[in-house]
Length: 179
Image (cartoon, rainbow, N blue to C red; front, top):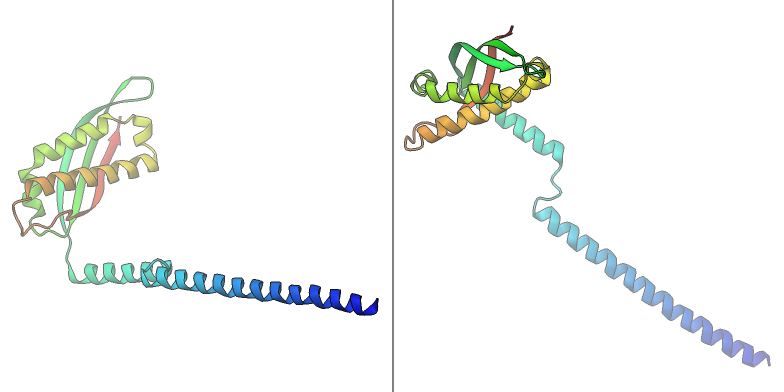
């Protein structure tokens, strides 16, 4: 009887050892697969540290900023009609400067003044006076004017290889009065 129990224990422990070996092998295979996938993603640049990228971008921007001058052109004294939330009309006086890396920006702005003013009128007309009086509203207006003015300059100078695309970098409001 004791011999039978020993045989059963040997059989069950032998089966347990086999199961442990299989589990260890599966864990090792899984670890190798994860390590291989991680290496692949790392080699493709997916695990590049975000802070490192931001630092590299900042260094590039600083180098570009140091080596390139900025130029300004003004759009002065636009008087625009706007409405408030209740539909009441108001007047707005707006002047702004565009800041660019393009040396000929003043000539470009003067040449395409009508197109730029049309974009400004369209953007202002799409907003209420209450929205424009908020900091967020002004920031959004700046962003959209920047995109649209760049689009105009890009389109009009597409055949001129000397003028860089998206050369306007900033919009600066110099007068912003709503009455």
